[in-house]
Image (tube, rainbow, N blue to C red; front, top):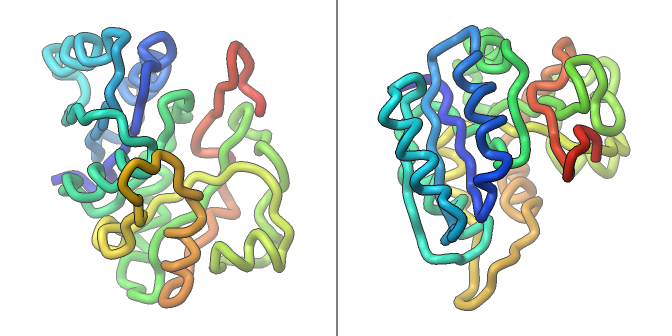
Length: 215
């Protein structure tokens, strides 16, 4: 069992998934696993990931399901994750080299606080530039609703939750429905928990759009 489960839902992203894989291989901490839920890809994603499993450079669990949408894939990931923290990293993102090390460094001082659901960090176009605003100055813990509506945060965040807590708050996916607004689960967690803000850190993940790193 590792401290961090990097969870990636993916659908026909074989063309860009290697960037994320390479960033995982380059991590300065090895205290993580990679859980990939393939949401019905038909572009060779399974063969690609199986090849990486065979290399053994990163511990990888691969699950294939019929296409059901990102939130359905997230529920599958929550169910199968065996690690302490559940870190959603999209298939078109990649991690900065010290991301896992920094997450563990922050978490080891916070895991004993049962009022915290996890860590909210930044995504960026590079290690210094967030995609949107910085975290609100002086705010070390926050509810996601307040971050967005009280502090008017704009941009992308990286959310690293206790696995046990997200497992208690799965997405409610109706039969035949493939889209569920992601904040629904996060706002439900707000009722009972806060998130620790990684205000002293740069972006943990880089986001891609087409050939660009910026949103």
